[in-house]
Length: 210
Image 1 (cartoon, helix red, strand yellow):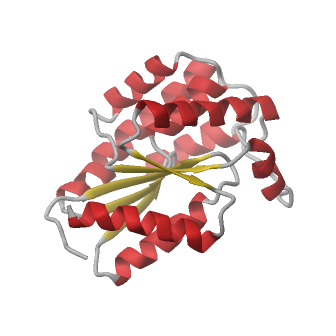
Image 2 (image 1 turned 180 degrees about the vertical axis):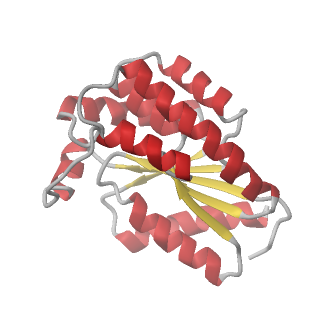
């Protein structure tokens, strides 16, 4: 595995229960064993401020207006990118992140039925135009996601939404992959864990060797 001088920004996306955390852990372990410095983070909540915003947007009791929700995510993203993600990339490190702006387009855009282009533009403004080098979409039907999460006793505000919301989210993700196919690696999240991990490693290996 070659070591490029510039950093690499990898994000994992997918509906609830798609296995992002599992695959992130496998990927990070592989990269670190290969001698790479990896920053593992998430949105919302990748910074101290982000944890406060996460508590508001995911766990606050009562409704949050859809546009207000989108703005809270954008505020988290602006601070997160400026203080954590971009500095790591400038140091030549690899950032592996659970959710990024594609989540906003899928959840707040498609899920909340806001204008997806406006949500994306807001996110790009907040992140000063930063896009991932690779976005891994673990695609899973919403019914399969709910089945995987059946043993949970608590759900956050988005996880608790009804099936039609999560169907719109999945459709939003798939529309994004068609609009930017070069950036996305789309994987059927029903595949065995190691099959998925191998596909991710192969794609990341190509990026690192470019």
